[in-house]
Image (cartoon, rainbow, N blue to C red; front, side, top):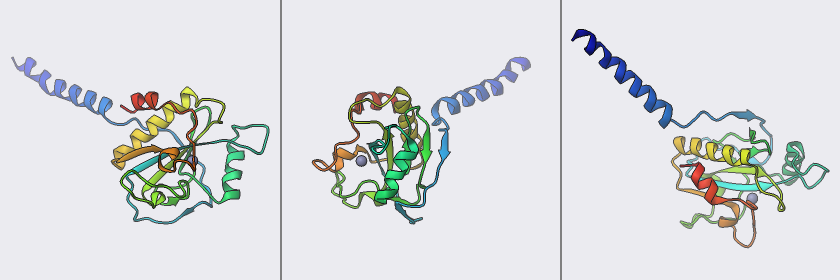
Length: 183
Ligand SMILES: [Zn+2]
């Protein structure tokens, strides 16, 4: 009998390891690539929205060049918090505690217009003529899940949803696929 009871703590430990392993958001690999423009410091902001964008390098032979995209951002004085390259590598450009200039004149479904102040911007490198890669879908979904675990999100929207008529990104983005991946 004693031996049998000894298995109970072990069993409970196994249950809790299983629970933690399958219910915690996976650690998302992020490459720090901080930039010095396109944001303002605001340590006290609260975050409840993510805005998904797409962008590409229009000034060189490689439309998917991370460096080219960053030079464009710099020339416009804009930035997102995260940038995801074609291989799915996630670059952190701006700390989440800072307000990045990514949404411009936009309106959230609840009527808020100062979208940058309460949102995190994620840029996916793609063009009007191609799809985001599978790796990009996996990365953006993992990133959004991880953000949601720290900042419960009221909205995950495309730029075109909050600035209709003015913005058309994220281009060719499959929301059905994304919504399945974030479940
Ligand atoms: Zn955009």
